Image (cartoon, rainbow, N blue to C red; front, top):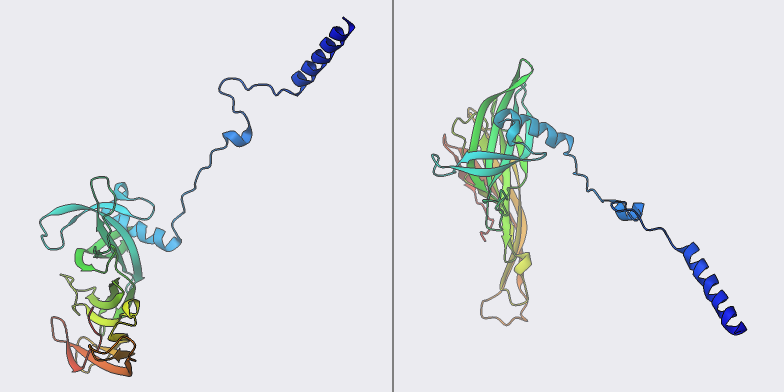
Length: 294
């Protein structure tokens, strides 16, 4: 009997300790702990000052309703069928203030699907858009808008934009664009005149550089890498300066029927190509463009 009483006392003591250590259950709707109730909120990255400035200019063209932080949802004409209007995502790319106070903006457009997502694939080019604005009475006024005037690049975008002078009092810009396909890469350049009422590529996508370094294996009989640098040079008594490209690089070749172990012959290459504006576009007038196509 005494043993049974002692056992009961021990069990009661253990139960008391367990009750003291027990954590009170939270009330309904009350979080179990601060850490469990914390919700990780991912902050949106703010647009950088340059992008914010370009977005301000594009809102002056299309309105606030179309604008997000770094792109706009807009209706634009098809590049070829100008009377057909479609939905596009428009992203600012570059801006430049001209000597007379006007500001030029270049933007890239991509078609969007029914869910509003940009349709950017490897084979999809970016669509070039350009605008000229002037500030009047504290507000931006649109002087010129050139929508979907050229299809350039790959993966839904074109590349670097550089602001240039095409001649005395002729501001313009060049766009470098291209892509890589199965290890073969090419970089092209296009030229645009900001004063061109029907803006179009004045150079017709001149080849600037190319290589097949991503596809040059032991079994490849022809490998190359040619890089070009461009500049505009004054032509006397001409409204437009010449576009001059200078090339340097190499090519390696061997006979098609040679074994894969045969060494390719390497030649260092240099070249120059001069293009003159003929009133409609730049045409080759001196030298040779030695950049291989891909």
